[in-house]
Structure formats: C-alpha cells, structure tokens
Image (cartoon, rainbow, N blue to C red; front, side, top):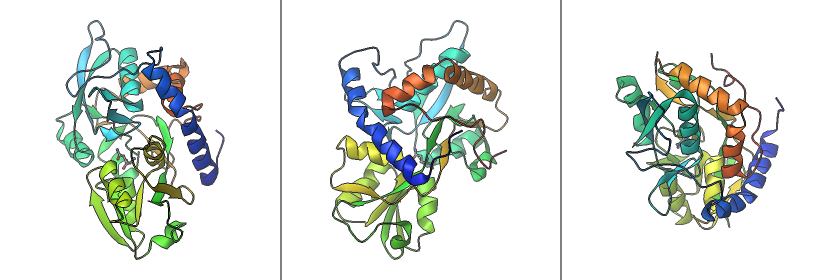
Length: 283
Ligand code: GLN
C-alpha cells in the first residue's frame, strides 16, 4: 500500500473534488452514473431472489456519503456502496434515518441490523460492535472562516471556540485542544455556526468539509493545516452478527470486480486508494 503523508493526502482529496462537479453533471444528465438510492423506508437495490431485508441506520446530512438530493431521495457514496454490497450478498437494504450518536446504542440493543454513515473504525467502538473491513480512507481537518489568518494548525485552537458533532471522532479530537468545544447534531449545523462567526473553527472529516466548500453549501470557509488523523470508515453491525461475513464478502467482491472503484470515481472524481484489510490498530 502506498503511504501518503497527511498533507499530500489532503491535497489529493482536494484534487479529487475538482473532478466532482463533472461527476455530478453526468449524474444530472442521466448518464450511467445516475445515483441509486431510496427514501428513508425503501432502497435502490433490487430485491435479490430469496434474499432477506436488513435494516441499516443512516444519518442523511453527511454529503457526499449520505444526503438527500433535490427530489428528497437518499443518495451518496455510502448508499451506492451498501446497495452494491447487498446486491452481491443477496439481501435488500431498508435504510432507516437516525442521529449519528444513536447508532452504536441501537446496534448494541439489536434494534437495527447495521449502520452506514462514514463511521470511523476505532478501538472503543470495535469493542462493542463488529465492523466490516475498511471501505474508505479519511482523516480529520480543521475548517475556519476564509479571512482567518490566526488559526493555521491544531495548536492554534487552544482557547478558541471549536464546533464539532456529538459522538464523532472530530468531537474527541476537539476535546484535546484546550478550547471551548460546542457540540452540534450534524456537520451542516456546525459549519453554519462557523460561517456565521459564532465559533472559530470546526473539526470534522475532511472529505465532508471539502465537499461542502466545493458545492457551495457553506460560504466563507476554508480548511487549514494538515489532516489531523488517518481514519478508515467501516460498516458496523451488532457484536456477533451473522451478517458480518456476508457484508465483508460483498464488499470484497465489489472491490475486486471494479464496482467499488466505479462508485468511488462517481463521488470523488479520483481513483480509490488501496485499502487495508484491517484498520490499523484494530484486531
Ligand atoms: N467519521 C466520523 C466518526 O465516525 C464522523 C462520521 C459522521 O459524522 N457521519 O465519528
């Protein structure tokens, strides 16, 4: 696997987003990249013969991973990915919208079969849920107002008002900064606070911040410094779930047959990086 420095990785992520508009234009023109997806109670995957339906929680304000399009349809990289995995593994997905920080408790209670929401595989979570193999390489970034010349790295966050999303890796990182951390239910709310000048910085996943900047869904924002972390997203299922192997087999199959790369190119306008079979530091 090619190792990238964090700053090079951030540049690569940014470059990938330049191709994004083309991908979106193609989708809007109705080419073969038309997004699949469903609303909160249905799915874009066609039911497999004899297959069962599994309910996955999803937090639909995290573009480009999961969000609702202008027709109110659930769409995004994670939606396409899980539908492709399901098709391969012979099940149908029922997407159930949920708050991000409610997912682990719901998985522990066994009220859902899984979740997909750009969730970072980390040891504390892996102790209470089972994760699929990694499906996306990510990292945390700092966002500030475009005019801010004072904050250029994590060290500058000390004493600052920092917005993050409840229950995320960004919130955990923000707590290390010795600042005044303000928690929000989702990324758009945190970025809006930054745009309005009510906080000095946001710490959250780089690809989602960069997408919000590139698509203009938030104004007057830029990212600064290098990526703060290297993280891998996985699909969490309840501990001991009989579906873990199916999800992993489906994911491995679409990585090997090129479907994963197709979905990655569609949403990120770049070739996917090589993915490890296990997230670093996770058994
Ligand atoms: N990747 C981050 C985490 O797992 C944030 C995910 C999200 O906000 N959907 O904590």
